[in-house]
Length: 253
Image 1 (spheres, rainbow, N blue to C red):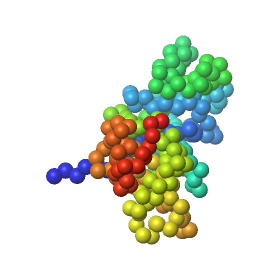
Image 2 (cartoon, helix red, strand yellow):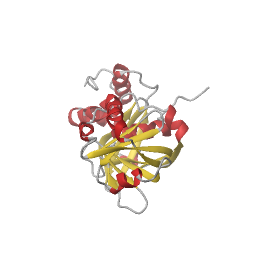
Image 3 (cartoon, rainbow, N blue to C red):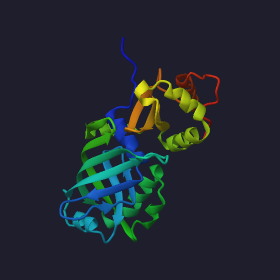
Image 4 (cartoon, one colour):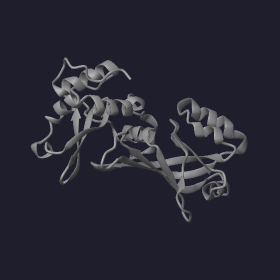
């Protein structure tokens, strides 16, 4: 009998971390890392990023020809709660960065905006320009270690279906549902039950808790009995895991 999946695949974790990441920098040989104002990983296997028009990254990409210049895009996923250690995950996307022709900038910005309507896209063609990072490989690192994934798996993966609502849910749980967090904490090993417990992540497969103890920070994952398919099943899975099936759990956000 096959065991149920208890966690997202590495490729799904990369896609979700990229979707959550508010901080990103582009590293290229010979220049200082360039802050990125907009980043979006497309299903075709590249990342579209916005950099200052006058930056060295834009200059190097523009003079590198069709093949592009080697680069690494680093993205940082921060927890939506004021934790002692706010970084949840780091992602490194390695590949080749290429310039986008001037006549194609607005069309590409419009395409990105359909999936990722970031206000800084309005600056494209003025103070910022778009570059494409053709991804060859990806690495994600968190408290469990680092794992790599090939670009073919990344193309097939999607972010977690609850990705866009996760931050609001975690903030709601931490602020208004100490009862549920306390019930979830009963699943922790005895050595982890003396620290301050916060909800660190939630996805269709389970909940991850952050325990801030005297000996450091520890993350512990609690899998659901079955993957959640919608908001109702996610709320039910959390309440069942907490052993409180009649509590209200997560509200609709």
